[in-house]
Length: 238
Length: 301
Image 1 (cartoon, one colour):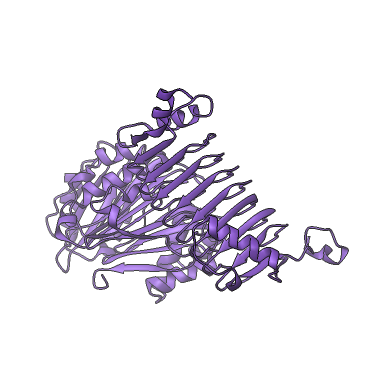
Image 2 (cartoon, each protein chain N blue to C red):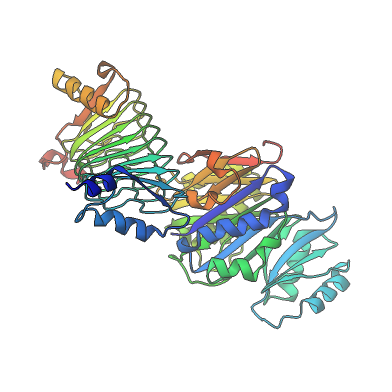
């Protein structure tokens, strides 16, 4: 790597969304996938804009100062996106890999359909957190709302607070860990034994999320596997 | 989609600039509802014994001064029409129900957008940004206001189909979402004597609230009744003479954000509507729980 290139990468690129159009910012971030550029970015004044830092595909580190709107860090690949504020609907939707961290709360459908990477919500996540998750790991410092992990296929959802109604409804093979209370479990979701392998996984996820909690305090929930295999006994319910 | 905004002033400074903030909030929700826009502003209470009507005329040449003179002759007082685009506010020396009945009987071509002692409702088709300018929203001073930007799904884009909908004296409703049992419910409510002017689903919700409160329910009870009797998706904001209330359906697909500082309480479909308010960066902010009625009123804040 040339010296000039290294210097360029060491500097933090500042972008003010009050003066820079969002599309220009996202285009510059997308361009990092094909050519070298700043490795660290600081975005100020997002003021609830939608699709901030969406569709990234490089080992870049992006810090956002303020509250973001819908679909922030959606489809994220490789990048680290840290939001120092709250996030609206669809945070890190369909994330592929990398790390997304929100200091505040996230609105509904955080991490929806995510295929990989780690999503950390330090505050609360709302309804439908991890809906149809397909491999993403989600760690929530607070609580999640109703219908979280609906039709979750694989990956893990860790909730340090409480879970709302119908947790894990119609769940496939995802693992759900909740430290607090669960209002109700959804169809085909049951409590399962927390074995050593789960405690190890929990401990790794909590460490990666930088959240101080004892894995032994959590309970595990998952699929009873009665719903997604056709059974003639259930014919009335189909 | 649709966008909702609400602002409740807790200081004289916010009351003085209520319209400026309302216009800015509405502009932020422009893209959520480019079909039409509307506001309910609570301002200039009339003296006891008088009442205030907001009227809409589809005729751009409407002679509001002549109408005011006629109303003055027949109902008493000497009302000066406050004209804003296609709407005019008239203060009359009689109670609101009588004044409204007079307009319906004598000028059935006009629409009574609101009636009461403090409420004024203005709504029109077109871009919210243009609406704000045309109706001079930045002029308004007042205690609180609701606004709506509409992306129509259930019925035609007309002035009458725009929000807010009046739900009784000094009451109004704005809605983000869609109701699926509105046809049956409209028929039931018609049998109870509730009058409907459009095929709009939100007007049915407004009629439902008006009916429940006519039958003795409090605003909170009427809203809680929505959880049982309305089928569909909704975030509702209801304006009252003293404040406003917010309710999301139990599924809560439709968004809502609430925020509060020492100066104001605000509601928006999205944070970006609230972000234009002074001190918003440090506001206490939360998402209303599904199926829970939230109420702010002057005496409670």
